[in-house]
Image 1 (cartoon, rainbow, N blue to C red):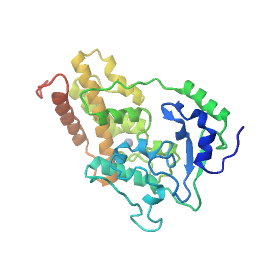
Image 2 (image 1 turned 90 degrees about the horizontal axis):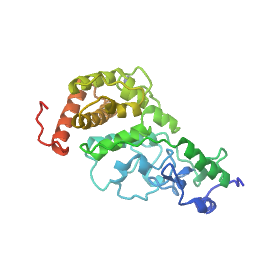
Image 3 (image 1 turned 45 degrees about the vertical axis):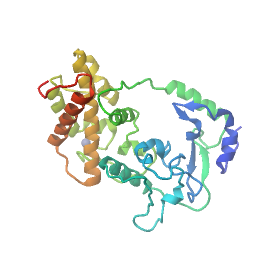
Image 4 (image 1 turned 30 degrees about the vertical axis):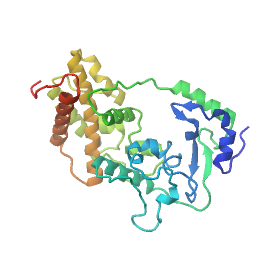
Length: 310
Ligand SMILES: [Zn+2]
């Protein structure tokens, strides 16, 4: 029990083979084998778990969809530690979309904390304190999962695009990479303050709820929708807010989506400030929310052909 594994994923997989089809929290067990990257030649950039507590392919699904070589190694994506422009990318189409560009900048922000070393990667079992694999460690992980399993199921909103639904779903799981979410993944970052208000640390609860920019946006959205002021204690609370207002079915559908769109727009505004150094304008966030909501609701919902007054 507890045999020390120095290196070699194969050896570790051999140890774990009775569990390879097991999933924990919907994640395959191999995600819990984490590599310290070494020279990076034997670590798959997108597919292995090495930088965050999940593979980059799941943290950045929008980027890997543009990746020309999905099995590329970490070493192949790093040119040299010393030069500027140290990453070597190969995309199968232009990253012309501003969201994708900001996602890439976010990824680069993470990569900047990496220092490649010499030697092969070393693989560890993340659930055990000493990083060694044992049946006991697997059982602990599986049992712990049953206790901690969160039962939140996102109510998919049909009239807004999948990417907006997925954004709030990731948000609820604290997988949207705010400064606090990065810190929890042991990524050291220099500036942890909220890019919108610069007065508090950036966490999901702060950025989307507590921040005075966000709360001003919420009060603008609430009065636009003619509903009580949207107020929540947690992200989960926020995403369920529409349920308890006693609204008609049509309005309920609309408010559910508008809350999601607001989260999406606040995140976009945050990225624009953080990555393009533009200043934040509350009125433009609110007007983007109104425009997107009207556009999508009138074209994509089952209540098509709405006019602006509705
Ligand atoms: Zn703030």
